[in-house]
Image 1 (cartoon, rainbow, N blue to C red):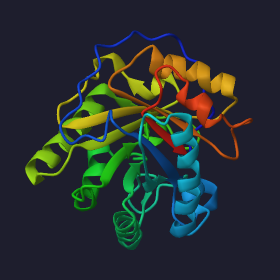
Image 2: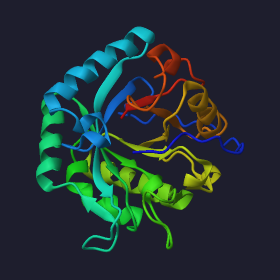
Image 3: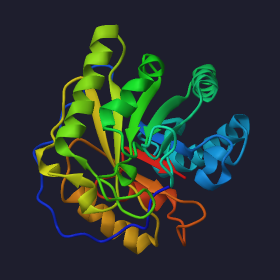
Image 4: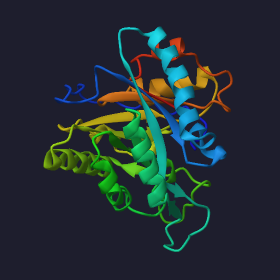
Length: 278
């Protein structure tokens, strides 16, 4: 998922970066994820192979990043789409379909058994963000499971997934940060990571109002496919010019031409804390 990386107007720089919370994965580690939906080869590398083979490929890619920056350990994991935007209303009328309980259980167990991270990504459709991700609470109670939000597919009235670029508000991001922080505190588990994907300035409204929240680590992930030059330009606008807390980038094996190397990725300013391959 994710459209082409788009150049956007310059946005204002936000406040100072947050200090790491005790037990956080950041800033000590760099996270590397493989993204997709189980069994669907058109939705990312996670769906192209069985989990065991995906893990082998992910370990090979992780070695490239460890070589590119030996100073920072690489933690690996999967980002599984937990709610998939649809082109039709579906039974709920929300233009969204959920991964099955069996799929969520399978990937939660596989990642736990192999000392991997698992991110559950919600696309929301016409659901409110909280309505979508709060339904994943029982899986998020596992210490290794974290959350991703994809504004591209969160629709307003008159919009449709795949035809329009969606959005979330700063207040909705803050609501998710607070919910995750409370979830961790109430259950005595380490801080969660929240990924918010972005490839266009319209995807996060009032972004300058987002700030770090104690007890949760926020990553803005520069999404979108394109040439290295276009991705670097979009990274400059989405990440470099408006830092909040931690920073990420997504790369697309079949669509980025040519694909940026690990050395090129870690050389970005700021160097990404989280890297995703689709």
